[in-house]
Image (tube, rainbow, N blue to C red; front, side):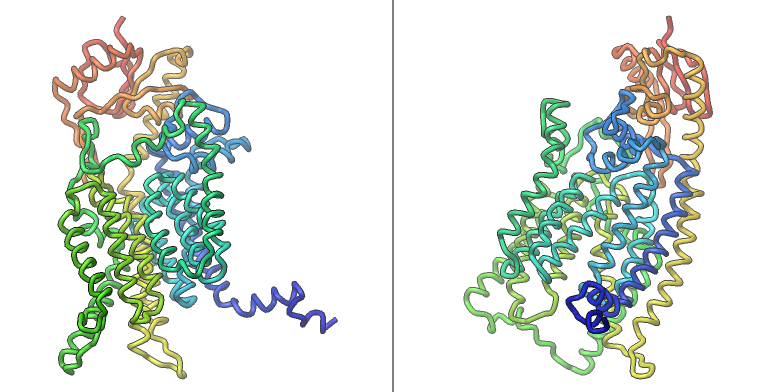
Length: 572
């Protein structure tokens, strides 16, 4: 019996060997999951108190369509996967707006697990734990966590996709059977996530000798099989299977007049300028440590007059072919910088793709460890940084897709420093554990402050939701036949959900702007009054629900007010 248990081919024995070998990893992963789940839970409680916002109602209404309970309103131009997952819970009979918060939070924790495993390919357990905690508690992530948007859902699937791609190279190329479908899940959660195709193919190209191309084909086919039913659905619904993807490849260098919005910002340095507020105090501390060490290291080298030889830039050591490659790399770098934000973003993506691969090719003789991983993560960051910097619609939450690679390089910097500056205790280097303890304390204090701030600074969402609910309840009693009325609103997704009917969209024209702090600035003039009135008359609206104060509509009269929410009825 003992011999049977000790046999490595026995299932129980293999399990024991695996657990013994990975016990520290399992403990760190479980601890990380518990901490992040706790943070996520309290962030969801804050959002439950605040309530959903318009984009969340779009996903919820689409979920009703997929569950077979449509109210008549939907916005099927939005990516379908998030709504489809929510619809599975709706099909179980639990139809509530709170479902979207828990699905969002659950998929976020799923992504954290994936990030730990992905980081653990390169880093030790403690480093991977700290990296996962960094990502989970960046202020830009906490702000969008549990909000009911698909951004973090897409990031979670992206993380798992890259993890399976790395396993395909490090372990077995059959992991591509999972890698490509998860990349498709990321795309179907947020269409712009299709840009991960660039870092994916850079990584495959760098490791083409380690994977079987047959497995690439099978992985791609399996991902195509996922999207086929969706294409069929859109074809049956709109007679155009490309309906939701029409705007995905459009130019990002211009904006239509209808997009006069708070998010319009042509500043290509938007994400660099706001980087400190995205990563918070913990990120700033890490950057200060890494930059300070880098400057100290260079200064030390200069004082000691030690010359660092990097043969890549010693042209005399390069053969003729590599000299040509270096020249091409230099020219592409100039073109990339010179044309950035002056051309179609896809051209900049392709130029950077070529630069990244050429750089990898030229550094091969240096035998630098994990250079393929470094380039993959940097290409991940740059694929989205290029697009969102050039795209004229900018908002803080678009940065979340860039936070995992930022996390990777922060941990890489701390890891390299701790390997060079060693504080030993009982012959063990405790530099990183000491840094980790300090940073974890900072993270927990910063997280508590950020979550509290989110609750306080978004109280207007709570007030507006309560007013919409009260207005909806009153209107249902006021006009029992309201489902046969032609209703319009500037908050059409919200009212469609609460009164369970198709409330149609009214453009905001130029009645208000949303300031950088998120507050609305109203500036209604006679031209706006005429624009709203003409739009409603042209579309034969019976009722108009709005939260724009100061409107004076000649063809409509206000019949009820709930705070900022005003219900207008067409004059007979």
